[in-house]
Image (cartoon, rainbow, N blue to C red; front, side):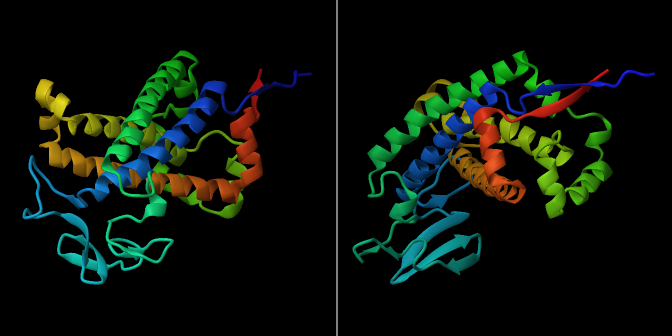
Length: 270
């Protein structure tokens, strides 16, 4: 009689992945909130090398009389009470772009915002570099994120998106291998968005611009780098919100426990 395939039980998330996951979550949260403090100093975004109050900004958050607004190109949306014009906990009207509850520190301080931002940016950058090196060493990337030629086809991606859009499929996928949509999401975040955040952050640095201006030139100027930095941050927040939604739908206790303790995956061995 044929022998039954043995089942090997392996952790779903390796220790390095779990450590980096939580460190990354902390760093990105602090950098986002401190970054909003820095943005409050000049809540306008431009393309090119230069940008000032009298120059045309493709995005701006501001206040006109008692009305807060967000402007994207020629489109203007009133945001009174949320952005540009809001009240603090003591009922005082503030006209910073982002409210104090969303920034670090909660009061306006560009110097303190920069200190928080740059300190955690270095931790984040070193952590990302070590994670990539370790993931290549222990074959986490090759094992979990490698995509076959078939998986790159648009028809396959669309079919995977349809197959995993139901609630039952989302719950079941928590214990399965990464599907193609998950792989593409993680590849995009780890190898595109996160390095792009670091590169645009360096391109905005006056010291980097003076010593290695080619980095600024790649993005078309310091103001363009600042715009790409902000757009990338927005995409990371969007990914985070979708990620949290998927965790909530697939079983938050089980998923959180797996990211803390490693979880379990089953592999058949002949």
